[in-house]
Length: 95
Image (cartoon, rainbow, N blue to C red; front, side, top):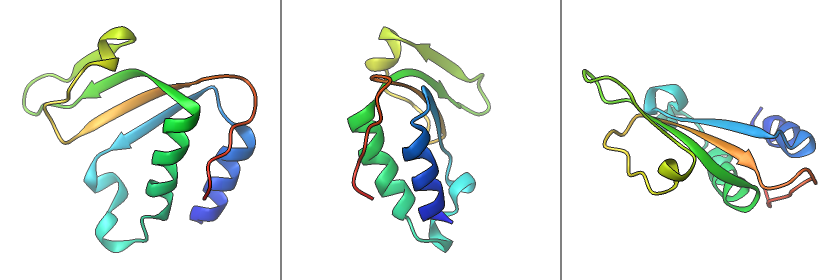
């Protein structure tokens, strides 16, 4: 399933990607982390950070957008990142 997801994202090269960095969302202790390693390479090569949602429970979630997001350091380990494609052309990162 991870290979299928990698192929689907690579072939469609979406304008925006939303990456959820919440441990319970990925359950890394019970699965192969190949897609996470690939996504890190793919995002760095093909996308720019445009937004962060820093989930600071029990405090309200902190949002940072555009230039503010680039230098923002999340306080929480639970974050949601929004990335925008660097261009319309296909972009490839080794699986």
